[in-house]
Length: 337
Ligand code: ATP
Image (tube, rainbow, N blue to C red; front, side):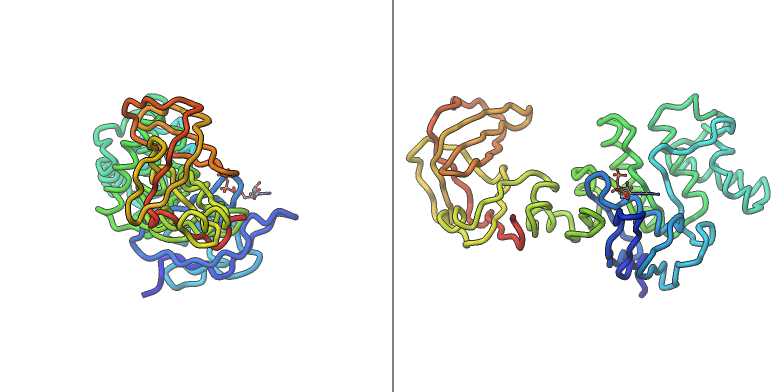
């Protein structure tokens, strides 16, 4: 079976800026795929290449096995939900959702029925007559989604669709989007710079940096086994141990990632179990984060961060402590410099 989307060594340059720089990637049919990376790393340009708003300078793109180059956006069976929703303010919600069908010449009764069905899919049944200005941010976001879904696309592109929502609503929409994707079975390609969002929603994640994909895999895989310092730092936070430090503390002589939540803080002299490593050091900083408390501990020339559930702690900055972690939490990386 052909992948829903295939990039083969794709490049898109703007003058000297290599916005997309040699991307090769298959996105499977029915997959919820996240493109994650910092601002300017090329995610949106990749989405625009799939949509047909941009053409590759080099390389090749296929959508369901067919060459996409030269195929205009409206013939691609791909729809985009933009971050700013791009709703027409002078049209009602119903008219906004049915707009694409009207342009295609679908008869009135048919497009009204389809718009209604799309709106009920996003839980906005009965809102047809309102105007965008009479809706909350979350409701506008749903209208934008319904407007894309009404075309029955095979691939839905979502460019930071939850970026404008507050945290609570964002979390609620994350769950709803995920459920909707499973229900419809449409391929979703989701762009975000929020790692929590990518990890919680996607079947697979591609991490972008400087126009390149630096790692791609299932969320747990990317989080648990980062290949580089960039991924270890961008997807969550991490202690990047030097080869010398790692080998002196039960690991290999390689750049090593150690997640702060794997490190526990004990009084000096605490017993170290089998399969565990430890380092003694001095607490330099304690920072209360709500659910967790973060300790920054100086050990030799390393600063190690430990993140522990925020129970009452009697430690204070300046205390000498023993950090203990499972050896299995030390993950060697290809590139740590
Ligand atoms: P963000 O999260 O901020 O949207 P992004 O990862 O989606 O970032 P892109 O929008 O793909 O990044 O941009 C990648 C690079 O290409 C950036 O340096 C951007 O300034 C540049 N770029 C994108 N579109 C154009 C354009 N039309 N003309 C010139 N440069 C562009």
